[in-house]
Image 1: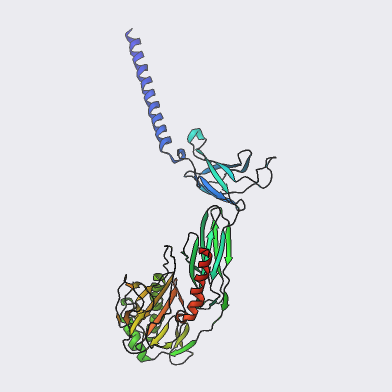
Image 2: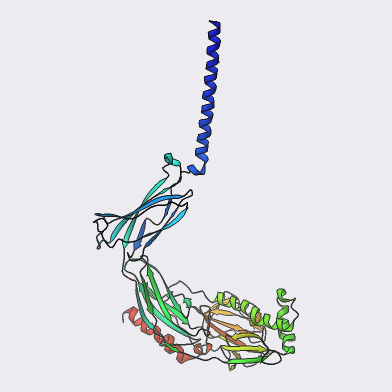
Length: 469
């Protein structure tokens, strides 16, 4: 009896040890399954809104992603009565994302045809990954997408615009943009530049100033609108193009000019202070510093308000009493050293230089908001004013600035005094005008007839349509 009792206890202990080993193995296996990436439990992601618009012409692009790998997907389209499988793929390679193009089935599939008059459809998108979870079947997800059919293009109606635009000049266009279903976006493009439109008078109506950059040869201006379904409408702005040839000047760079004004400007910028070579100094100031200064100007003058305006009035600019023109807008300037064959630098003059008496008062002819009041390299002391609708004026080389950033100035207000700060050899005013970051001809905005023909009349014509008079 005693022997059998000891034998039984031994077998019992052995059995218990086995179960412990099995339990530990099961716990280890469970921990492995729970933490292993190959057993991840996250379903694939179908990246699309629950409700979308579709024009049926362009394929819908729906992105799938999964952290393990994509295994398969299926796409069905139903009109409520009939259902068609439009995509079904087993993915053999190991990929973590895929853009699926869903095309509208124009023809019957296995004898089934969708109702071509249906305004609403549903897409049932199912996707499975290659995870070993779910008994090696993977994680699956299904998403139903409500689709609103819209195949009509947005409406773009040009109410009025300037009759013509000159190379380097400006123009105005007033237009309406609307869509029967849902407008996504619109933009105005002219001369390769984008121009923001400001809401005008009523919802859906807009006004924008355009510019033909003086260095751009071919000019086309269009308004492009796109709705949520991807339908696009492009309308040309009918502007008569007036070409203009700008002056080319050759300027001899003399030692006293480089050792004087150019060296003074070099000293104002620590990063240029190690430059000793005369010609390199000139090139650095005339090109590198100039571009840095103009970058500030362009950035400040791109802003256009989103606020709806009921009117916009502008009078001719006359910043300097009895001012005489001493340099024109758009001049192409070539600097040479010694003889013309030795050209060392090139730049463009993007303003109008005017001179009268020393330290003469500089007047703003139209109300606005001061956006800059500091020293700006070659432009010297330079107040800059926002007049609304993307129109900006700047006043360079001033000896004294009498306004501060943020000031609201009225027409006729004295904002500065002329001088020779920056890259100026004599007391004068550099007067610049920009339309949404593009330098334009100041002469146009200093001409009452041009303003009446290209701005005032355009607004009046559009007002009659918008107000229904």
